[in-house]
Amino acid sequence: MLVVGGAAKKSAPALTREEAVARVRALRAQGLRLKDAAAQAAEETGFSKNDLYAAALEGPDTP
Image (cartoon, rainbow, N blue to C red; front, side, top):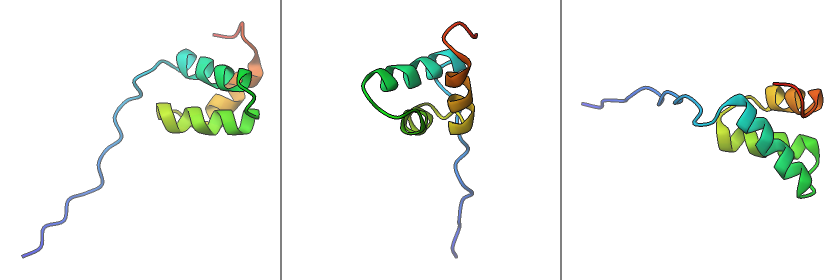
């Protein structure tokens, strides 16, 4: 008998969206392109790369 489990569910992100966007900006300050910074932060935080990219474009004063 072979028992196969389903895919593991993604857990909720450990950071808030604002913290994830701050991570994007920190990576940008280290010299990464916005595209790469958003991708890395998405990988680290579980947020959507596209969401983080768009949020980072909105500016630092945007909640």
